[in-house]
Image (cartoon, rainbow, N blue to C red; front, side, top):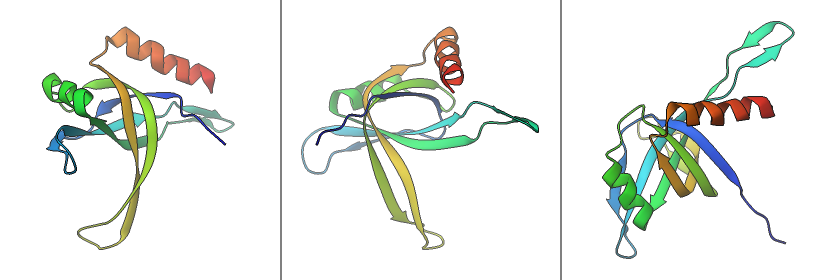
Length: 129
């Protein structure tokens, strides 16, 4: 059986971007901490503010070079077309407790899109719910 991942995520750079060399071959990869706020939910009790979600976006080779050249800052908006979703499990350095996260492997990245583009994108997400 075959499946497919077809999603796009709009969010902001939430921490410093890391660029590193690949270990197994020549090239670089980029790690982008991405934050986003889910749309507000209307309930019988009123409006519930959307929850914050955090992901790590990873980009490789040419796309990582584009990330490096973009000189991203915290709070810069990005629109990510996702190629793959991978779980990430590690032990917390301070507590030793297991932690988990989701890595989004980027197929393409739109850097610092116009405000109207972000609003159209996020309005489309809200309308789809």
